[in-house]
Length: 95
Image (cartoon, rainbow, N blue to C red; front, side):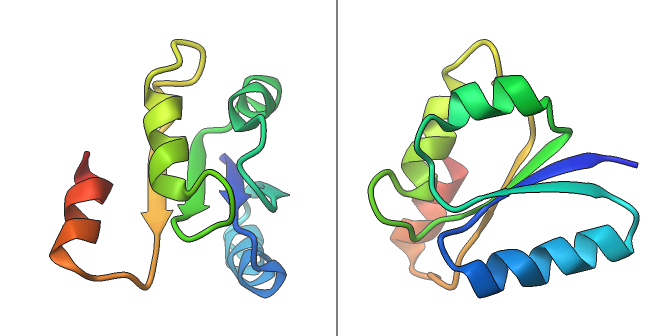
């Protein structure tokens, strides 16, 4: 069983993702924003983060970049979820 953190400001979307993951026997923790996300991940020690891109405040692209620059959590894999499909969105997602 893996521990997965879901970060999404949409309660309905977070609940849907959580349901799928729990049905696959994963442990799930959800957060509705990226505030102090690095500190939360240090405490939770997840195996994976699934994060929405479009969120108020620090968006998923910015939060992911910050995670990858933080030695405490930089090795945690991150999956970014978005409905955005422009070339620039794909570029920033890869960065």
